[in-house]
Image (cartoon, rainbow, N blue to C red; front, top):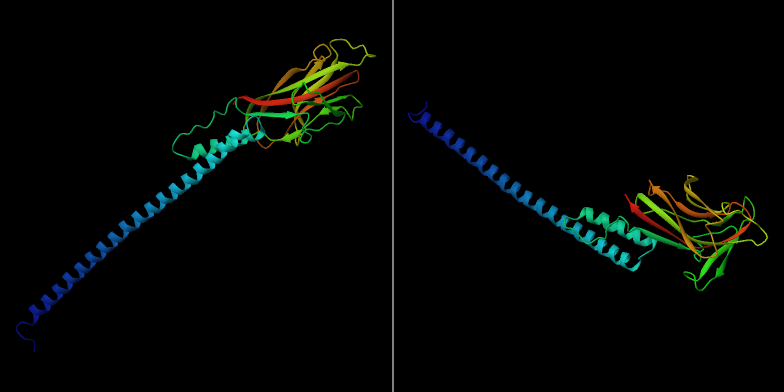
Length: 253
């Protein structure tokens, strides 16, 4: 038979168990909160460390590209190094002294550089007083052999509007009487894989003389994957044409 205090003792025991359970839950939630807060701090620190490491690596790549840029002015490499610097700048929070892109992409290809430049009808001739001292000189042979210069089949680093400036000279054959408006050479910008002429310009007997001069054409680069050629074609007999260089430079977006 239950004693006179059995119910009150049972109730006290239940209340004590309930209080213990609440305290345990509060403690558990407190531990979870501390662990969550600690984990969030750890994740943030890891993310910050990763960000700092990424910035350091990107800065190192940009500095290397800058060094390559400074030591390869007026070459194709200059344009590619500048492009890498621009990409790095877009990933870094601070500004840098990357040179402006517009008007600074410049490539030069000389007649003495074979390859990448090639010829179907010409030969190298030493001219110590002209440019680098050697030119490609030749005349029209046939419809299948009329390319004085073609190449280099290289891409351009950025899209935009460009100019190609050719340095040329010509001598008319003494036994041929050509009118002054007769084309004796044609300069072209050609996309190799697409077999597309982007720009052409006929040069006439009255324009090309034995004195070297510059002749330019404009074109647009729409794809950095296209391979470009800069050509001097000879449309017919009657002249011997000399090529010293072609300079390609970007003028606007």
